[in-house]
Each structure stands twice: as structure tokens, then as C-alpha cells.
Image (cartoon, rainbow, N blue to C red; front, top):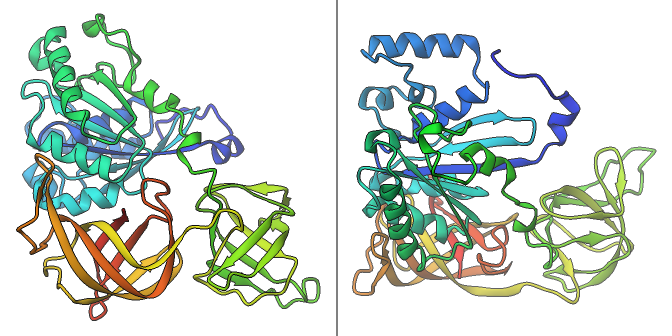
Length: 427
């Protein structure tokens, strides 16, 4: 493997994981950029590189077409576009990375939502020749809707505009005007050429007027520790641990991934929906006991009292409980060819809880190109984004998506086909 083994396996396992998604219009260079990141960070196997070299020659390219590293589907290679979400993994001595390469076409909005839903950052590519266009606004809005905390605007193909600073500055000014409407706190800008590697991993002499860091430097140094909600303690119970062994004969633990806040040994907690209160007896992982735990750790809590708790319940602090309701408003991206059915019944999954729901009302659809609300149009079709009211068969314990991405998100499932038909962000 063509990689730098400068850090040990233990160091690799303990490194911080950084997830980011790429988005942009067709031919803005998303796949080439990811290929460049993999190539310049020496994260490509030799046989992969040889295969890309051969494919590049077959396509008549006089350079190594790094986009072929990510365009894995045959249809994508033939058309030269990205259709599905392609996930790629690499690491540097500072961080581990998961990349979601998402489609640029409007008909694949649902794929972008899928790839962006867990991202720490969104890389929005802009072709330096075209500037800020309709799809730039669409992708930026979706990234904002999904509450991705960090956004990096990559002005790509600077080589095709002779690396001119004034072109970069105009694009930067234009995007800032649009970004004023978005709910994104951290937006960075960097001029690059993905094809030639300018400012991707190494600084470029062609862009010596730019004083900021390279794209890789930004990805390695963006602070994500404070992106999680460390105030509102939430542990959706995923599994009740009963070993039934001689050593742990009376052990009863409640396992799950912490969705928010900090839990400490001895904390007073409340169990939802019962409302019973107790104290945390221990916080266990596979091999050690902890004094405290926080997101996104997966732990098992044992409690001082023997209470009736099962999957779908939630452990919270008794002084800080989430919203509890059967009537919920969401911003939803519809993900199925069959339109949303008003008054239709769907299965709903929220954290570890499974219920059924009824679609009560479609309040409006959103024109993702200009952010206008379309109140007269209520037919929600594939890739549409709409404000929807629904009622569940049992109460959900939730926070707004803006407050907590884990407890504020849900999915709708068609009960007949078991397909995911919609994803929702609780308002």
C-alpha cells in the first residue's frame, strides 16, 4: 500500500473521526477532489492506482484521472457523473476521515441528504468559471437544513481562470450574500485546483496571494469537540443487558449510544416514559468502568433501583427532560418515487423507538433554489422538501433538530415495502 505508516495501530484507533460530505454542481470536480485527497495523502493501494492509470489511458486522458477512484458505478464512469453516495476512508497522522461523495443533480437530492446527515462538515465546490449558481445555493441550503456545523467553500478550477485573485474574491463576496440566509456559523473559503493539487494538500505558488491554510489543513484542524450537545443529557435505550452468568448473575444494564449531555456516576436520572427517578450506579464499557460518559460514546448504565425499562425508553436528567408529544412538526425530505399520502399511515423510527404515525398536514414546500415557501403546492414528491405535521401512536421524547441532531431526527418507513420514504428534522 502506498501509505505513510508513521503512526501505530493504537494511535490510529484513538484518533478523532471527522466526517465530511462533498457537494456541488455536475462537473465541479467533487470526485477529482476526493481522488486528489486520497492520492496526495498516500491513502491509495498500488493496484488501485495502476487500475486508475490504465482506465485513464483507455479514456484518452493524458493525465491520471483521479475521479475514477470514487466514481465506482459503471453508469457513473460512462457518464462521468456521481449518482449514488460513494463513501471513502483515509487517515493522516492527525485524524481519521470518512468522505461522502454526493450527487450534484437535483434528482438526487435524497442521496445528498443521506450522505450529509452525519457529517461534521460540508465541502461545497464552486467552478471558478461559473461562480455561485442555482445548485450551489441548493446544496448550501440542504447543508444548513441538516445543521452541518462547518462549511468549506472550495473555489475549484482556479487553473482555468489563470489563478486570478479578483475572480476568487468576487465568488467569495457573492456567496457571503447568500449565506446570510443560512443557519451555518462556521464558513471557510479556499481557492484550489483539484486537478493539479493546488492548495488541496500542499500550498501552491500559483495562489501565493492566498494567506489561508490548504484544504487538508482545514480538515485536520476544524474543531468539532463542541459540535455535540453536552448540556441536555439523553440516552435512548437500545438494549437491556442481562448476561445470565454466574459472575454477573444479578447484572442488569441499559446499553445505548449517548445522544447528548454528560452522565456521571451518582447522577439523579429520570426514565421516560414512566417518569420514575433513580441514580446511576455505574457506567460500563466492554472492559472498564467509567466515572462519566458523553456523546458519541456507547455505554451501559446500571441503576440503583430495579425499574421496568426496555428498548425505546430514554434515560435523561430529572432536571432537564426533552419535549414529550404525539403531535410533531418536521422539515422533511421525501425519498420515494411514490408521493407522500396526506392522512397516510407510516412506520416511524426515532432514536431507538418504533411507532406508527399519521400525516396530518402539509404546511408548505420549500423551493430549495431561492428558499421561498410554496404554500399552495401540497403534493410532496421525490426529492421535495416540505414542512409537515404528523401525529404518532405513542409519545416521542425529542429535542428540536437545531438543538440536537440525534434526538431531533426521524425517518418514515412504508409499512408494506419496508422502504425508507422520508427523513425528518423536528422543528
